[in-house]
Structures are given as C-alpha cells and as structure tokens.
Figure: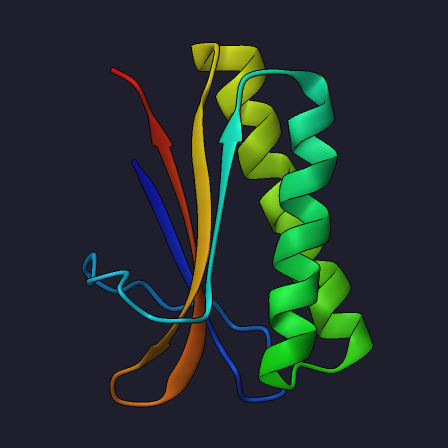
Length: 102
C-alpha cells in the first residue's frame, strides 16, 4: 500500500499520514486493470484537486503522481485500486492511495 498526502496549501511538499476513513464525499476510486485506467486515475485525481482549490500547476503535479501510482499498480502488480480523497486533519489535504490485490 502506498499513501501520499499533499497539503492543500499552495506548496507541494509531501506529508505522510496514517490511513484514514474514506467516507468523505470527495472520494475518487479507480480500479486499475488495464492501461486505459491509468489515464482515468490521473484525470479524476486532477479533477478532485481542482475541486479542492489547488491551482492548475499543483493539480497537474497531483495528476502526474496519480498516473505514476496507477502505472505501478498495472505494470508491477497487475492491478489494484487508486483512491484520491480529501482529508481535514489537521489541515485540508489530498491523499493518493494505491492498493494492490495482494
């Protein structure tokens, strides 16, 4: 399992958080089982970042990270799920979570 949290502050410094509940309405989940899902994960993570108020450049950085995580799921472990969700503890941030089936 890979867990990356990006603060919604305008900085892209990475923070690491313990896994949190994903019952947030700002949740994106993409099952990754083919190459087309890599782009879908990237697109949906970027959409969520923009919805949360990240600027366009930061949203593209988040999309790139989501694409890399989804590609790793597909090419190295033959599938899994990429989730992106908002957290608010203690600051607002975005978490990218890559989970494989193993």
